[in-house]
Length: 162
Image (cartoon, rainbow, N blue to C red; front, side, top):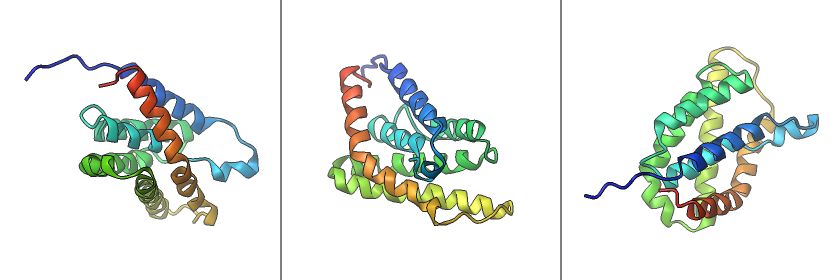
């Protein structure tokens, strides 16, 4: 087996940094409920594209960073992102073969799992139950998935991320 140095770690890091920036970007009051789960979408892509580099540990780290920058309960997003990374990593060979519309449906399920875990944690710490607008971001993430997939795939190919 020939080991080649892995390339493109900076591209992966910058894509996560952009996702973090989009997560904390100020939005008008009416648009706050429509903010996609940017970090989760980027995590899903990189776990699909490079499962040997991006996995549960990166998911946990990403979740902790999201918890810190959004001020949620420490570990809430870390638990969800770790689970999403694990599921994506286990299914990556199958998901890669799906057409983009089937990948979008799978992404919807993964984003809903993240929201369900967040709802479970909120209930466990006796926070108020969110309104139905709580469920809008997974649908928006599903609709954005084809564009996110194409943009990150082109970046991965251009910078030869291995």
